[in-house]
Amino acid sequence: MKIDILTLFPDMFQGVFSESIIKRAIEEKKVEINLVNFRDFTKDPHNKVDDTPYGGGAGMVLAPQPIFDCVKALRTEESKVILLTPDGEVYKQNRAYNLSKEKHLILICGHYEGFDERIRSICDLELSIGDYVLTGGEVASMAIVDSVVRLLPGVITEESHINDSFNNNLLDYPTYTKPRVYEGMEVPEVLLSGDHKKIAEYRYNESLKRTKERRPDLLDNQ
Ligand code: 6GU
Image (tube, rainbow, N blue to C red; front, side, top):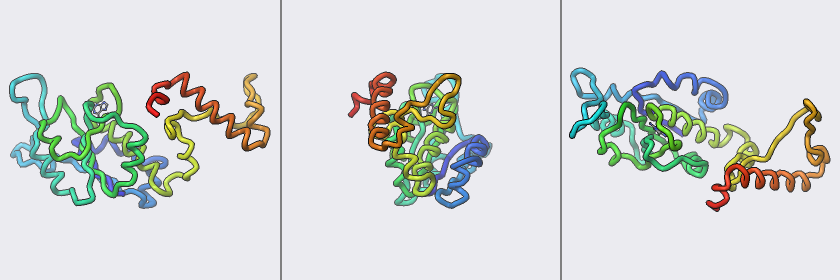
């Protein structure tokens, strides 16, 4: 998979993509991630990418030209162009799965007070990562890239994501490691039994119980 991230702040991404699983996925060429500063595409003599809003109001608005030209330069038949915006579709695990099947993602990070409405016309999808406001799309696109890249074939073992929280709309079951007793708290007996059928049953029931307690909304969405 190839991912192009259009941002005015490419340096924000360095740490996130140079550690752990994402770093390894890049090294092993499971994904290629390019940070593209769309300021490089502006035709403004002073390198401006934004301007004041028509009709008045606070702040600056990202102008269409640099983003249009940048997307035109990168887009192919296989590209999916995604705008990060708090008024987009709320991002969920099923969307991560379907994005992980794409060949080329172009993520556009808005910033400042907003972007010219006409930018939406060149996007295939608008995503938000939740109901709160970030200073820009950068942190949102990091979350999306992280959650998509871990699903690419060979990045983590299949087994690791079959049991992920949110698969089948259920939260994860509790897990334990050694020691058997820690600070008076014991590992549930069934996990030591070696009875795989009983263990699977216990885990499913715990998942269901936890989901009912913490996220009943997930069960309503079945
Ligand atoms: Cl994608 N952008 C911004 N600015 N804020 C957000 C968001 C995106 N998702 C949640 N909050």
